[in-house]
Length: 97
Image (cartoon, rainbow, N blue to C red; front, side):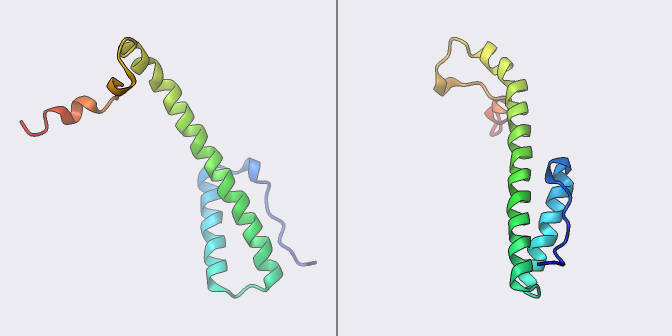
């Protein structure tokens, strides 16, 4: 495949850019207009972009858990796992009152 498009390195892509490129690839594949070899290259690129986006999301989740965990741990150090403190627990406790 001599005319294969050169894709930018995924490691340099922000989450939003990777997501937008992935959306464009899905649209191209769904249209079914690309030759098989091009479709396979787009598929591989899409898989790599999806994995890159998932790493971004996993990293964001880990950071959120890291920054919120000390508060929950400090307030529930003596409680059981079932009594784990969550930031939104108090919001819904008196909802029916």
